[in-house]
Image: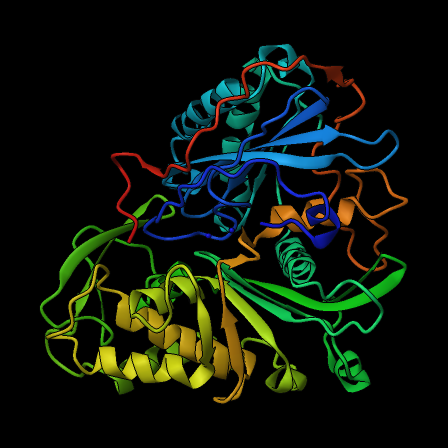
Length: 477
């Protein structure tokens, strides 16, 4: 489930883009910070590397960044990015932390192939976990992170003190907003005509926008506003992350599986599923039996009533969003692609009501509708309810669905780097926050114990194509 590079970095450009673009079954948020394959073509300048792991609820992804210091005293320029991933995510190994950490070990081999051996000891490695681990009991989440730290400590790379941690949900929204608005050019100048962002992951969902009315600021709950400075402008954002309201967590809530522990032989049923369906599904390391209503209602109306109960009255509804412009990605994008409402490569523009119409079409034809996922009716109905009954969007609200802006994928890592590279700040240091603190340096320790070394022109680092490997135990749908 996608990242960045703002126009500030785009002026200098990315040197090499390997041309193949790969379709993956589902883009979890931040899956593919840039194009799925990028590599540097010139390693004759001062070169730095950084390794970022995104441990999401549906998979773990590694991004190996290459930066070049072309102008002394200026922030380094992104030269390229190498990507790989594995499924399921760390949270699937909730009771097998060592096995979960082994998936990270496998991805570290990508880093070894991508970073010159001479730079290993000065290349920081960082893992940020998101909603998948935030949903776990604290002691189990920490057990997983402990095993990952052990793997990092045994690696040849630089391991900062805070190299493995769980990212606060609000940061995801802030950084995704920065990423999109950099790429659309909205953060240049002083008009602040920005776009809002909607991100729907597996375990959580985020909404972020720049309020234009004082009424919104006055009526917004405490903790939903954060301020920071960038390019001599102050931005006071509305942002909130709703844990447990991601698409897959919402499935469990709709099925009633969150209200009771899954027991052997127990089947959770829903009017959102085909009547004949009997199946099992693993999420967060727990196996669930589920199926359709063998007797009773089925179709859009009863399904919508089920998903509506999940969100109604549980989310804050800022009134001005009905008249605002929003970009939507991750599962919003994926489900629109799955039902051919938008093109996979180009994305598209939809109204909120379009999700409702498609949900009705799918749900009222469950017995005849063929899809790769039996949850399609439930997912579309939930997205509709989340937008309308949860956030309070109007049927006519227009959403720009995209996975790329200017050929670059959206996501939190790019926003993180964009914030860090504001002129006048340390290249990878967070800008001033007047609300909840923004994340620490993307790569702590970078530039401290990792002095830059000038490399001679040689073979370019390996340019691995974007991969999505699925472990045998994965039954993600």
